[in-house]
Image 1 (cartoon, rainbow, N blue to C red):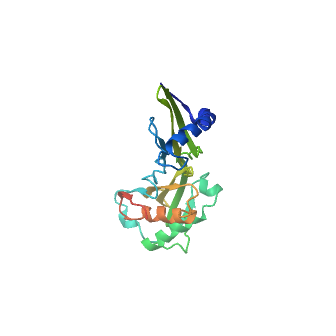
Image 2 (image 1 turned 30 degrees about the vertical axis):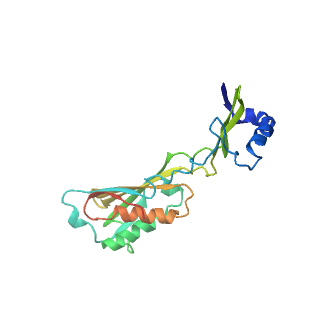
Image 3 (image 1 turned 60 degrees about the vertical axis):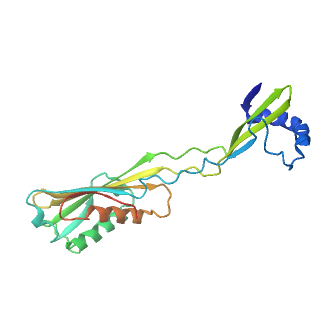
Amino acid sequence: MVMRRPLGSFILLAALMAAPALARSGGMWGPGFGYDRLGGNRWDTSRANSGPDSREGKVEAESFVARDSRAQLGHGAVSVTSAPGDALTTGDGSAYEAAIIDQLVKAGYDTAKSDPTGGQLVELKFLRDTVVPEETRRKPVSGEASVGISNRGTAYGMAIAVDMTKPKKALLSTRLDAQIRDRATGATLWEGHATVYTRDGDPRWSEQAIAARLAAALFENFPNGSTAVLAAR
């Protein structure tokens, strides 16, 4: 007859029955320790962290160019602004604006001189969302104890799982949209969006690092439109 219950219910019973069992097996550290009719004592450390999410650090980027607008892109005066009410206007959007300006300069634009009546305008939008919530705290030690009683004696066994890993922080997605418009006519010349997935609190992904990665992805093939999934760096 075999009875299985949570480990906590058998702590006292196992202690009381350990003495005769150990005496028959040669003592606490004797050759019989760790084995009995119920399969022995098993220490399971297989619940280790399964590793990073495959999306961590990857960037998804997509951009579009308006028909017959390619010749207007990549030169002349340009200025950068955030959409009204966007998160970049209420938070610290300087890192994202600076990263976009750096890409615009590389593309051939003049960002030093603003033309309030002409030139082009880049409008940014920012969105951050939780893709996978933070893991709940695990029990470091858990398991089950079994006691068997028969006409040949009493046997006991334990199965213990040890998990010393820390709960993972939330997996976040950060998306940056950019739209280039002709200031005089309001016509959209080019637009794109890029999303990166990062772990909350990861020291490798500061706000500046995220901004630089998203801006580079947006302008990867500027002024052409493109769709790409860029590997983590």
